Length: 181
Image (tube, rainbow, N blue to C red; front, side, top):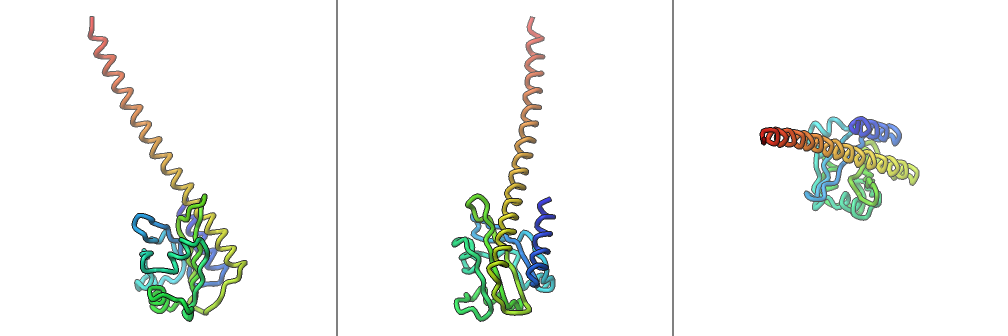
């Protein structure tokens, strides 16, 4: 299932990059937010409410930049262009480094993967960022495939119901025709 894919990716990213947390957020264009889809690690921060379930893009400029520019964004607590919203998150959860990588599918940015490290300020290598980007795009594909699968099943269920109604109507009309001498 999609949930298994998300669980596996967040856990593996946390392990492979030797970081404390990995989150997957879906982009909600209408609400201009990114609600969380899955997370791994930093359970204490989540339980304490230090990390949000949904981030409004209007006040989270680095997240918005990653989505709009379609480029990974990497920041540390000492980053010179750190905006107050991101700094507040990093300070509250004692995060030293954040890496945000957009998830793209067929030229659409559908969300982002966020990598969190509370142990050290660090710069991720191009190879590490490339790995996250590769997995992020695979997750985007899985999300879109899951949506298409759900749409197909909904359409199929509607069609089956419609055909039942048509058969019932045909039976009723035949019954009326049978009463005509």
